Length: 301
Length: 237
Image 1 (cartoon, chains in turn blue, orange):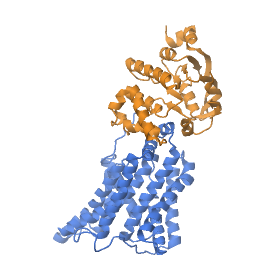
Image 2: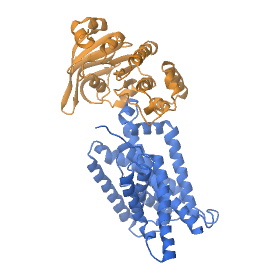
Image 3: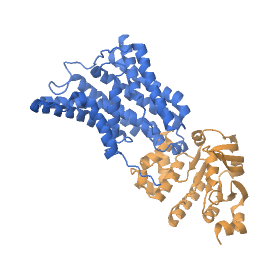
Image 4: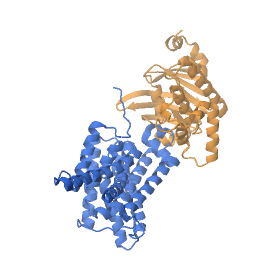
């Protein structure tokens, strides 16, 4: 039983990370109809920035805030400089640019900080944090930080005029222009926010998966699965989807371990977690393409 | 009375296709002007051209300043409100949010609230539906919402693209009555594009008739209304 609750708890912690990255994907998807394949690598790069700042002597939280702010600026710049000229480009061109971005972030991080795996600290004190036998201090911290970030984003989009303008620009860009919204800047702002949320996820997960230029590869897949489960056009759904996928993958591995313990037959275990994510992607795409909370868009032909 | 909007030699293009040929017209300050014409005459394109939503050439002067070539959102910020065809409802936002987004650049919260109340004076039905998703409104209500949202911009000039489209006759009469009140009470000049020529000529003081991207006739509504060709082709009696 204790093992079970621990698995759920660590699933929630992972799920919080997936939720953040999934939300970053969805934020860009709803306003541009594109999936940013470089989202994970951008987050990884931000995580290295925070690591660098810490190794220069800054405290964890100072480095955290600085790296998140840096990511915001970087996201805005990428949108303004690289994607602005491609506004009317075919989908394939944009996909190639995303893959290029992915490769650039990855190799730049490798060139600057090397491909050696680094340890990454956790800011959550071992003694006073966590509940013994249920959830570890870092896991609890990750869930809390994520929930705070998601809460702030919710308040921003729901209750501020700027957030409202961003939603309007995403929903109907032409009409948004006709009420005076500077849609181009809203897009750039969306990129900045997505990069920031990704950075939060990267910095939170680095303690668990260790810091290296390929750390976000698998996580991006999980995030993609989460976004699909929740409905790719639904931010709230993406968050819920993140937690579902996080817990689900642990449960599958847990069940596999139990079966092995009882029968001695190995069917599925920790090694197959990523496979679970991919199965989820394929399953959702075939059975419920709109996701759990997505809207089915009917087009008249 | 000085012209609020002055258009000269206006051409518009969709890709390689030219759809306006040297259009010229003037909108007097405080007046209601209508553009009439059959499908494809270039009425909607003319409105889009004013807001730089299509590629254009020519001069467009608003309040004496040349606005041709400025970005759509900057033109709107000069207080030109465009109510597009299809109403442009933000379907996933609530009615309240649809109205507030038009005031998002404004920091004077009290004045925004006062404007909202004033708009509800014209469209009391919107007040009852404030928290409803705008996509669930009826066609007439969405048209009211579109006009109300345009009012939240505190416009000096309102461009209306077929406000009667797809609506029941009673609703159309109601909306046109409200447009007249808006013109009189708020001193908003109106440029109205309509298929329903009889209604439009009743509301407007001046009319321009478009055919295949050119102005073929213009004058006071009363004169246009009595023209034999207009009567036969557009009024149907």
